[in-house]
Length: 294
Image (cartoon, rainbow, N blue to C red):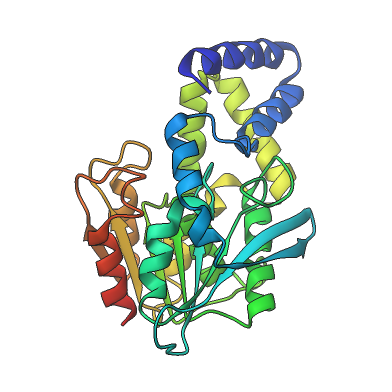
């Protein structure tokens, strides 16, 4: 959504909030949860999608049942001598596994088998919306289908959710903690994400409060509960690699610094100059991940 359209939509929701705050909260949260259309809008994205077809054809696609529909998993065999490792890769908001083929291939070349997961409303998965619990359900389904993973590698929203799956409270999430965890350009707190969204839309204070209320009603927890660094602090035995660029304009570098303060088991690797999206398929970053995973 362009900034102009975002402001128009925000103004309409603000007007609704004057007379019906709860309705405005539902509208704001509903718009927030909409995934991008499955067909890429830009020529660059369409070209990237076409260029990934050969590699995607090397995977066995399996649809996994989740409470809200089905999610697509893509099982890639190792390249070279198998070494008995299995890694899960989770993309970010508005993305899909097709766009991460340099990373997928780089890890396959270490002899590992890779499972790429299309999150709800993305890629080959069903639906048009996504929330944190829906994404957690998707990772849970993949974990149960493939018998666990030696590492989870998540980009952006995918990394945020992976951290919560790995370290979230057992009374709230079916925890699946891999031997190692890699977070690439990942946000650290839902509060930051909601504030950024509300600012982009130009929401009034009344609508912001209604948005928080609707999120709690929908998800069952307050926005402040979703703090991934707090959850990582609860799994000090699990090595975590955080990769981030200080020039990332979508997720500020403060998120990586906050992850780094979660404990001595978290190491931050700065990949400056790579922004938020190019970082995923960067040879520098892929090499750092390979080294970390051993």
